[in-house]
Image (spheres, one colour):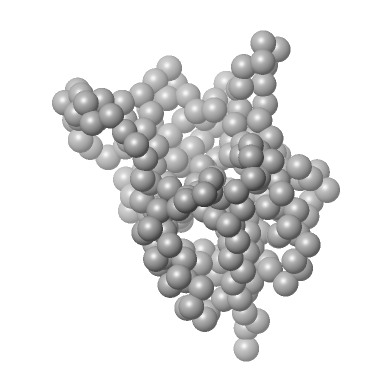
Length: 224
């Protein structure tokens, strides 16, 4: 008989979460398939919050996976099934609005060290990539226990103090350099509720054809 996997869930928030997310959390904590611990960390800034989450997770040895979910992200009800793949790092499919496009946060690093959206149509299932967003990300304990992954979430800045690499991308980059693998599972799409100017969305829809996301030119789609 297989041992029940332990999943430590941290819902990052600043005093509120989407009601749809609350429904999902209530459901998954009663599914019974996994040993689940649920927390609602709200520390600032976000870098501090994520690193404190990791520290608390590592102290609870009975949990194998850390699942971080942002307060405006609503994952599917079967999100905990990602643990069955036993992967180092796997993101659910999240979306962002960049350069007048809604794009999936499934990213690859080009030769210049910049991250771009991978060419996907949504039917690929589990795909290996170079980075995913941290809106809904599951991380195995073995990654965070690595001595070189202490203080795992940090921003990187250039000599002028301009951020060149954000928390999620720098985390994925460091993990891959240590030999860990990063995946995104396209069968686990998340809703992303965000305030948006409808005029801007309308203009974007008018300017561009609606078609499967393809790899965007670097000048139009650099991620930090």
